[in-house]
Length: 237
Image (cartoon, rainbow, N blue to C red; front, side):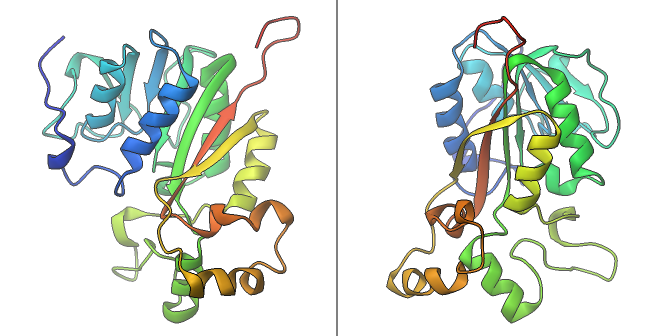
């Protein structure tokens, strides 16, 4: 394997929101043993792919374009458009990690189905996206007219080339339709919690389904879903 740099204090502009990589890595270590075949999509500059590899994972890094500099092994990078059917066989991976990618895609429901297709029965999908259900994002919509991290920078596109705010209600529906199940929901960090926000939480959340009224998704900048593809009939978990 070629040498690559993994200094998390010097990540390039293609990196995710603060503490997202660290939190997702903690969840990977919690749920996935070393040695599994893992797809990192979108891989960006390869920083997270490198960290997965250091945990002993067999990593395939996937993105639309060849970002430079790239901090992982270029021989293990595959260029592909996640708006389309991806160039991998059904069940090719034990797990797929997608950090802040789904909000960039034209058809998030299709992408969720592709994630489910690519992992084997019993495999996991770890997916993160900006937390538009958070108190801060909902306040931004009220004050500014758009969710946090979805500010229009022109009449034609939003910041960071985001397309769709991905809320928890959508994810729960898309996950079910894709044949996946939710094991856990986490956030990158519990930001914004104070006496004022807690006093407002029952008011803000009073019309939401019970599953959406907790500290998650009310707090946190990025929401992280741990999803499982059920094992085939007669197979172990």
